[in-house]
Image (tube, rainbow, N blue to C red; front, top):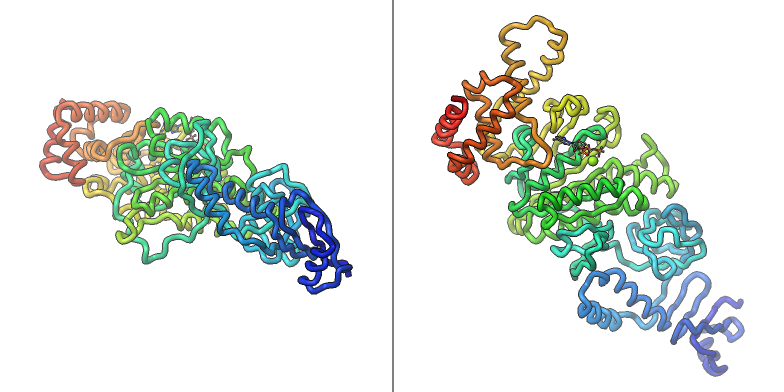
Length: 568
Ligand code: ATP
Ligand code: MG
């Protein structure tokens, strides 16, 4: 049986050939000797399935792969010393299972001969592209290509690396726009960091977590008052297309300026121009310096769109575990689910409801579980998540929306009808909730928002019934009147977040007796005048609320006086 093939860089002497055959324990004619100068030195022995590779070429390419994996963004000295280190650890010979690509379509490859592959493992395809194992089948594996999208062909060699996908992390990424694997795409040059994290890591355990107790202000009145968010919380932003979802999340990022909160915005499957608009808005609002934008655009492959939120979360975790507060926006997870569906169908996994694979819940739960408020012994950092979901026809009971609603700690439901009626942000008060943020709301806010949500919900309900000019009694009239005015108060321009104390001042003013006589149409302008007046003449009220987090009796008295002055 001429089963073994021995390849060497140079022609072997007869004596050497005999020695090789002897050490392999076979007769000389059972071995085929070939020469391949590309090996540089050493030999490679193969039985058609396993390969014992003791060539110089392998060691060089292993070192090169390490460089590709970990060092592309590192400073030059670091690259050199790491390569040296890497070389000294490389085994002289290595038995690898060399698989062969059998098909490569739309970023999904099937390969055989890799029976020891693990799910999530990184593969090296054709010596230079990377893929991630997704499917283990009886006689083949399925993987998604992370690089070399249209360059991998059937017949290419595939090798296991024993590693998983890692991305560059650290403060060097702030102020940058990067691709899903952390490579810069903003034309601002290399990102110099020597920190890396796996894209997927287990979420912090229960004992590693603390209660959500500190507020994360969005600067949006309707949110901070009615669906308050705490650091470490996951609050879903859900609504039809063009209802202000992205704007709301962006405003929350803009509002973190000077608050020591780092932000990560992940764009999944969006148009390149939309992402450019977001980056410009961040730049204009002076918010890019503490923000990283991770973009897997609609033109990127489904595998890259799938990996993007996990990679971005790794970048956020690096900061969280360093004790910092981080806000991450996933815009949006509907498109992420669609990318996963595409991959799954190409991998020929069985399709379930709406053609999504059965584990689509798990891809979002394991992502959002990584948000946390860490226990003090772990530094007390936090990761707050604002995932976005797009609905069709306001149907929040379809598959993906219900999944993500059940994973998060509440949702902000934006409604088309309200949006088009000019009530922006278009928060549907009745269907929006925050399950944990209430504990984090400062006392000042809690004292003024009592009854606010109920008043608004009752108003919206009654407004529907009285739309056709039905006769109403005095009680109903006053509910309608107050509701309409509160609604006006919550209307807010895009890109103009409010400081907490100013939100409190406006909401407080709405329950003032003399404010009841201000007409609905004039509410917005009157409140603006009030704030201007307070900022100019009584700034101490605002600083007192901001610093203590409370609304003291003397603050209330001072606000009453300011209101009287403005309405006089
Ligand atoms: P898409 O479904 O396309 O992603 P979206 O739900 O993310 O849309 P945005 O892009 O945030 O919605 O907003 C849609 C439009 O509404 C934009 O033109 C934006 O400028 C405008 N808009 C959003 N919020 C407000 C607001 N508070 N006041 C006025 N206009 C707003
Ligand atoms: Mg959007």
